[in-house]
Length: 234
Image (cartoon, rainbow, N blue to C red; front, top):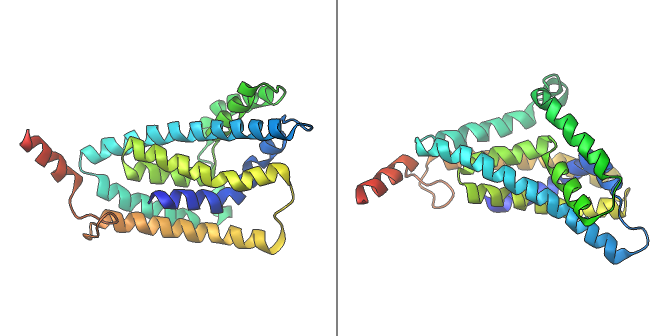
């Protein structure tokens, strides 16, 4: 499942370029020192990964709290279905409902902070920009968050989000250096591959929740039974 995080980030990074590209293009990187520029971009990506890791911990704890009550398998199935349904819903239909509306005030503050940071060139500025960038709402990040909840383990959920972030780095970095390098047929193919892969991930989570007795992929031992056995042992 962790491998899917990196692939999701890699394929979905085209979407990231479209959503976060303007921020990446506006990074106050050095135009004369290539080493310094690479270092600044690296700090920016580290800030994004830091934000993703914290998000993973938070939602991993939420998933873990549900698993304690024996809902882990059901949660895995529900999240798998949600991931599939969301990518199958036409964009025009889905765009009518802005689920980020309750967060508008927070998002506005993040954007304001980003605007102020983009005017500076200190190392901590790039860390701040990357971190704030990672907190901005994004459909692809939502998919990764769903998966983080389904994993139900703070450490693994954080790792899932970090791997997702790592998958976005190659294309995001290329976009900073070559703003128009991905066009035409290749761009369309990657765009079409994203929902297909999300459906595959959603299907894996459904299989995981069904408890088919497949080692690592779909264990048939309910989480609650494991907890009960551990309690009995003590």
